[in-house]
Amino acid sequence: MPKNDRVKIAFLASSAELAQSALNFFVKKFGNFELDDAEIIVALGGDGFMLQTLHATERLNIPVYGMNRGTIGFLMNEFSLDSLLERLQAAEEAVINPLRMIAICTDGSRHTELAINEVSLLRQGPQAAKLRIYVDEKLRLNELDCDGALVATPAGSTAYNYSAHGPILPIGSEVLALTAIAAFRPRRWQGAVLPKVGKVRFEVIDPEKRPVMADADSRSVRDVNIVEIESAGDISHRLLFDPGHGLEERLIQEQFA
Image (cartoon, rainbow, N blue to C red; front, side, top):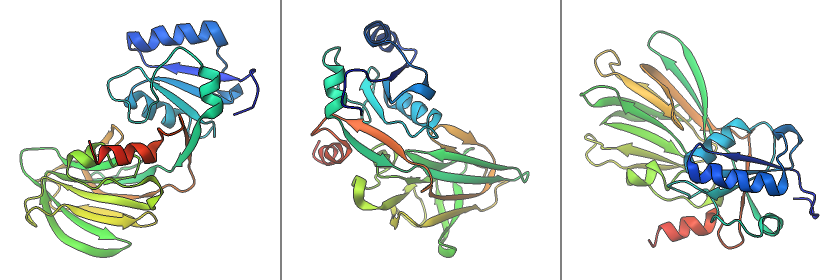
């Protein structure tokens, strides 16, 4: 961030009353630049709003500093009306890459989405999904009977992945988590830790009888047949955190909570 008091800040906020109130306060005090003219983005809301903000600004290469005015704030800093410029000056940056999902549906349509947290495959109906899993074009699991499966980034490893009993991944670990959701066969198979450069391919077995949907950070595609997932190294998100409260520290804290 520029080392002066004339920082071009773009303030964004969720629709929640607390977030809107904070937005009004900061805009009156600092003004509000358009995204194309801003040097830094301050996002006011919860983790869901932070994901929306990162997706919406992924081509701008502008660092984002979040303050928690929502329910869950793993990607956010503690909220305060005081000392914003000082906090921005002292903030530490973490750079993360999203996942790129390519989903091919049973009707032949093709969909590409990005996910900062995870890409998940979920059964659409009452019957278990049957998935075949390839890693780097090599068949690794011929049949997984399950409610679903997901691939998570380190930044997203404490979200759905952790709830599904997947591992928490350090930010600098250069790995991804492949986690089963309620696996039936192989019994209690939890998944695997894969290199970040790995490419995962799911094939849905009998998709007409056992339909499956794919979801990338709440962007859903129904009736998928094939889903390919890999790290999008060409896209980087720059997140800012208060010193001593960055993603690395938060990931460690989660494991001792």
